[in-house]
Length: 367
Ligand SMILES: *Cc1c(COP(=O)(O)O)cnc(C)c1O
Image (cartoon, rainbow, N blue to C red; front, side, top):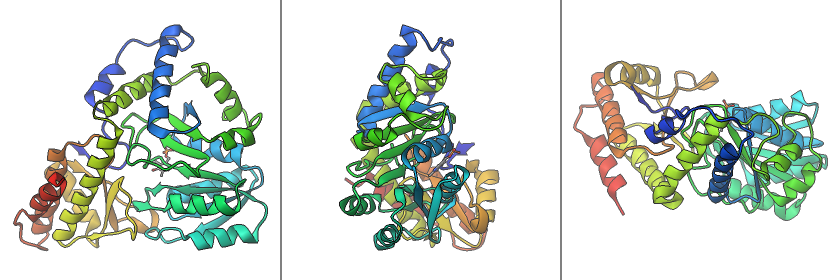
C-alpha cells in the first residue's frame, strides 16, 4: 500500500533502522549527545531563538503554546478542524476565546483580524495554522503576523506549522511560537511535538503555566540537553536521523522539490478535469473537491493500493487529500496521478490518455 495521506506520512527506512537500536536510558551522556544533535538540527530547520520538544502529539504543543503564551484572551482563526481546536483549548482553560470563522477553502483576512483585535483589548495572543490540514489551505501568516506586530508588538503570535515546518521555509520574524509535530512533514511516528519560541515569548512565559506543559521548566532542562520528564527517546533518535537525512541535500533542496511537486500535482490533476479545493492551496497536500470523492478514494485503495485521505465533517465524502510532505519519490507521485486518471476512466468521466503523468513529469522536471 502506498501511504499518501497528509499525516501520518511514511517513515524512511534509514529512520526506521535508527529507531530499532536498543533502548537508551534518557539520563545518560549517550542520550544527551543525541538530544543535543537533534536540537541543533532543529535550530537549523526552524531558526527560532529557543526550541523545546515535548512527548505529546501536535495538539499537546498547541495546548502548551496557548496556556503559556495567552494569559487573557485568545483570538483564533477557524478555517478548519485544527483552527477550531485552538478555540476549544482556550475555553478548556477558562481563557477568553474569540474566533474568526471561515469556510475551509478560504484564507483569513488581515483586515478582519486587525479589526477583531482593535475591538477587544483583552486579546493577548493570536493563534493560526500556517497550513490548515482540514482543507489543505495556506493562510498568509507572514503578512498577518507582520500586521499584528506593527500595531500590537506585545500580542503573541502562535503559528501551527505542523504541516508547514519541513515543507517550506517559514519566515519567523513575527512569530512567537512555531509548532511542529512528528508524524507529518517530519516523517516520524506520532508522539513528539516541537515548539520554536521567540525571545519575546520566553519573556512572557516567565515561570510558565501548568505542570506537564510548563514551558519554563522544559526550556531550563532542554538547554542542558535533557527534559523535565522522561524524553521520547526513540522518537528523538528518529528525529535526529530524519533531520540528518533531510540535511544530506539541504533544506533548500527539500523545499524546492516540495514546491515543484506541489505545482506538478495541481497541474496534472487540473489537466484531467479535477478541481483544487482551497482558494489558497498549501504546499503540504493537494486537496481536490469532487462529487465522486468517496468512490475515487475507494477505487484508488482497492485497485491501485494507494491510500489518500478524505474529508471530515461537512467535507466528508466531498474532498480527497493527497500528501505532499516529506521525502517523496517522484516515481511514486507519478504513479498516484496516473492511478487517479485511470480511476476517472473507469468512472466513465474521461478517456485515459496518460495526460496526468505526462503533465506531472514535465512540470516536476522543469528547472
Ligand atoms: C495533525 C495536525 C495537528 C495535530 O494533530 P495531532 O493529532 O495532535 O498530532 C494540528 N494541526 C495541524 C495543522 C495538523 O495537521
